[in-house]
Image 1 (cartoon, rainbow, N blue to C red):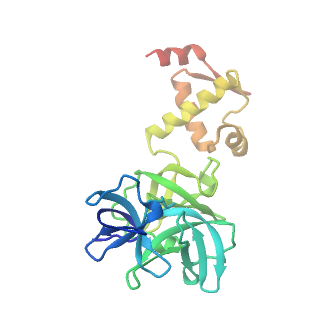
Image 2 (image 1 turned 90 degrees about the vertical axis):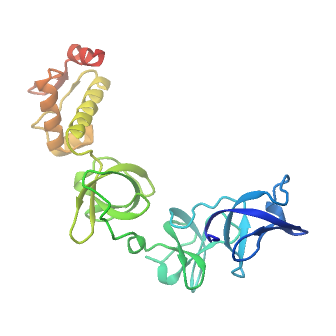
Length: 285
């Protein structure tokens, strides 16, 4: 079955002056001459992207779009009309985000996170910037502690909104996020909480022991780069700890406690000092 807005493997059926006709179950699909490979022959199978042309006819291309059906991608707004905004997605025909599918007023030249969707009624591919509306609300396949891929969508007063695994929508709490992030960034995160209202809370810290170990390694590396001593300790303010180590005070105290017990660092009244002998022996093991 022909897949609009996606890649298709189609067989070359006929050569004409203006291109190749490719065979599909529904109808023949034109691959315009400017996209025809020099070595293409009748009977060959070509991998092409299929979308609708300006007259809503399926057409093939070997251009690479910036996203396919179901993808969340940042696209630049090109032209704004009364009925919607045309986005540059790397093809001759721009992707339309209908006015009804716009989260906010769109400005030409600005990039927006856009999901590429398909309208079953019209058979057309369209874009939407109403991201949370078009994300999967069925979260039964997710588990607390699960490692996930995040795409940063936006910032609010309390959190950082992100697309999860190119499918779900969740939030990182700002007061628990110590890694500098910007809209459009991708990073690894973890499911912190699955709420009864189907909302998802996220964290950038791996739950459990591995998180403590990772924080300890971060502290040691920062100490080594600072010459083995930093004037930060368990009485330092959360702001001071966050600025130096990019972690919460609770996480910092837990990590230095574990390092102290192992003899890897010494706790001083004015800061923490790395016991390089202990650390070097640990690395040799």
